[in-house]
Image 1 (tube, rainbow, N blue to C red):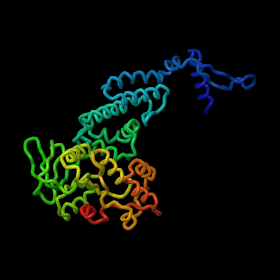
Image 2 (image 1 turned 90 degrees about the vertical axis):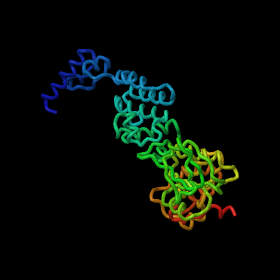
Image 3 (image 1 turned 180 degrees about the vertical axis):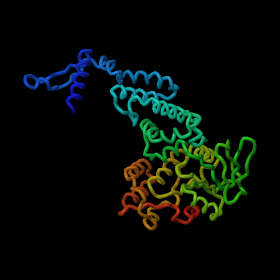
Image 4 (image 1 turned 60 degrees about the vertical axis):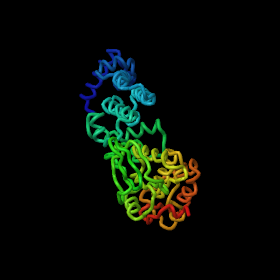
Length: 361
C-alpha cells in the first residue's frame, strides 16, 4: 500500500471513529503511528455511516414480502421461511440462498406453494413456470433449490429426477400408454380399448374413471418404453399392461388406483423394471400407493447374476439397504444387488418379454 493510500485509509477510519462507529487502537511509543486493531463500537451507527443496511434490517424487509406470499395452508413452508430469515439475520446463506436474495426466495416460495396446492398437475414445466412464476425458464433454474427444500420437509431416498416425477413436475407430461380390454371413461364418452392393438396413448387427465370389458388375468406396469412396446406387441393374453415412464407420475397413480378398485382382489398386480435402486423404489412405491401388493416380474437374483452388467453410475447402496429393511418382499432381490462383486445391475431391455402367467402355473 502506498503511503498516500494508507493516510487516506486512516483518515476515513478516524472519521468513522469520530462518528462513534468504531474505536481505533494504536501501538504505543515509537510505533504509535501503526494501527493495531479496529474495534466495532456501534453497528447501527456504522451501518448508517457506510450507507449499508444491517443484515437483520434486510431480513426484516424480506419478512414483510415473503410472509405476505404465504397461503397459510402449508405450515412447513412458513417454517422454512422463518428458518431462512433467521439465517439472513446473521448474514448467512440458507439452502443455497445468499442473504438478501429476495428475488430467488420469492420465486421459491411461489413454486413451493403452487406445487403443494397441485396447480402444476398436467402442465409441462415451462407452462407451469410461466403461469406461476412469470417466466418460462424460472422453474428449471430453481429445481436444485426446490428439491433441497422439499426433501427437507418430505424426506425420501428419491433422487432429483425421481422426486420431480413423483410430484408430476415434467418438462412434458407423459401420456398414458395402455393395452387391455378396459373402458376408459372420458368426460363425454366411454372409450372401449379392447380392440386397439398393440396399445393406445391418451392424456391421463382426460380420464375420469375406468371399468372392465372382462376380468383380466393380471395387471402389469412396465418401467421403460422399449420393453413396454415389445411386451404389448409380442405377448398376447388378457392382461392389462401399462407404461409407467420411469417413476410413476401422480396422474398415472390415480389411474392405477381406479384399476385397483375395480379389478377383483384375486387378480395379481406385477411390475417389470430395471434391477437397480430405481427399479426397486418403483416397486416399493407402487406397493405403498395401491391396496394390494405389487409383485416384481422378471426381476430376480438369478436373472441379475446371469445378465447383469456394471452400472453406468455408482450403485446407491445405502438406498438399497433401506429398501431391504422397509419392504421384506424385496429384501432378497435387494440383497442380491448388494452382494454381487463386482457390482452389477440389470436393465430390463436385456430381457425378452414373458408373461407373468408362466410363474402362476
